Image 1 (cartoon, helix red, strand yellow):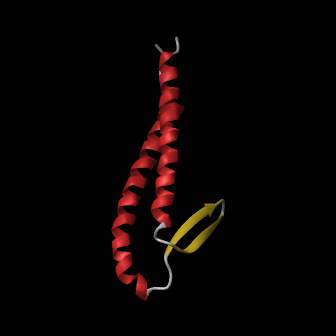
Image 2: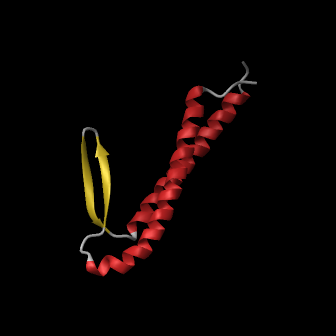
Image 3: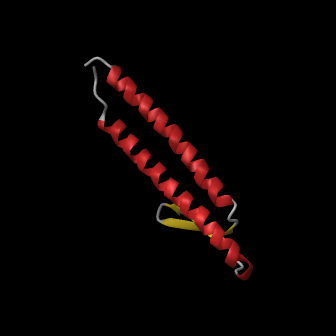
Length: 98
C-alpha cells in the first residue's frame, strides 16, 4: 500500500479551505442581498468585484446583486471538481505498491 504525496494532501487541504470560504461568502451574499433591496433604491452603484492580476489589479464596479451568487456557485462547482480529482489522485497513490 502506498502513501498520499505531500502535494496531493496539500491540494486537498487548500481546495477544502476554498470551498468552506465560498460557502461563507455565499451566506454573506444572501444576507446582504436582503439588506441591498432596502437601500438599493437610494444608491446608484451595485457590488464590486476585485480581480488581481500580478502587480496590478482590476475592479469591476456596479455589478448586479443577481450575478454574485452565480459567480460564487460556479467557483464552488469548479473547486468541488478539483476536490474530486485530488481525491481520485490520492486513491491512486494509496493503491500504488511501495
